[in-house]
Amino acid sequence: MTADELKELLNKYLADELSEADFQRLWNALQEPEHKETLLGVMGEVWENPAYRRLSDTVARQRVWEQLNPVAPVTPETPVRQISRSWWAAAAAVLLLGGAAWMLLHRGPEKPLLAHNTVPVMKNDVAPGNNKAILTLGDGSEVPLDSGANKTIGQGIHQYNGQLQYNTPAAATAVTYNTLTTPRGGQFQIRLPDGTRVWLNAASSIRYPTAFTGQERKVAVTGEAYFEVAANAAMPFRVTIQQRAEVEVLGTHFNINAYPEEASINTTLLEGKVKVIAGQQSNAILLPGQQAMLPANGTVQIRKNIDTAQIVAWKDGWFQFHLSTLPDVMRQISRWYDVEVSYQGNISDKAFEGRIQRDLTLTQVLKILAKNQVHFEVNGRKIVVLADTGTN
Image (cartoon, rainbow, N blue to C red):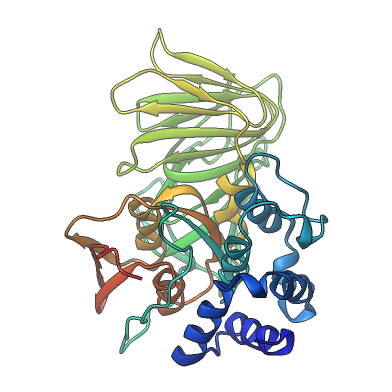
């Protein structure tokens, strides 16, 4: 196969225009040693193609390089020809960078990293989640919120697009508690009375006072939330999590993942310093790049050198996975698309590495996963993940 033919097939794959027959031609060619030099040359050209600017994302490219050479990873600027691992693995990595996402699949050495698969046919596709929430006021009344309205809800409470803002007068004396709740398939932002900004992921909530008074600022969250806390050393900011833990901060950026279906409550620090309190004998001080994990039955554990970009990717419009199991991946998809996921047979323990845009339709996301040997049956808003047969 000539360089031009190989480049044409690679570009077709990235544009999602490759036929079944052409895919087989390409895959067969990639496994022929005589195509090694041609392939590496074409990879460099395809990588820099302006039509695929998403491949220039620093995080994405760094992860690809690390996967290709985990012992001594090179930088994204290093020429492709310096890759030291098997050349066909490099080719597979490039192929997996198509379809508005990049996804590297960790599998045993006996199996290739790439496989072509059919895409589930959905009569009525499911749109991605969007900005929507319910605001429950102190008197129990509920106000639906979405991204299409700008309105005044009450004294000092305003909605602007997909954000709720509080501008409560400092002299306010009648303090009540409000709760902002996002459904499955929803997200929302809020600026609290002290100026703290909070992003709520799907199926999450935050309860807070309409004005912060006294010696502390205290809120309670469920689900997942990202905080940018307004500094006020005289009034510490505290977050209560499922009545199991508390995060104490002065001024910082951090993410809390506290979904009940997850194995642990995870608090990840991006900037500043926080203290995680989980009972008298289980406290921890976090520094930037660290994560506190609190299992259902256990004490706080500290993880260091966390990829914080992965943790908060949801806020910036991405699903991002790092050594994530298939159930990990599907739980995120289930919450964002408000679909029910079940499993049939023994599900492979393969781990996923990569990211997918959250503004794609469900069919588009399943199509990306299908290219990584994930098999589905789809019926409306119900998805059955089928056992991995081990075939390619």
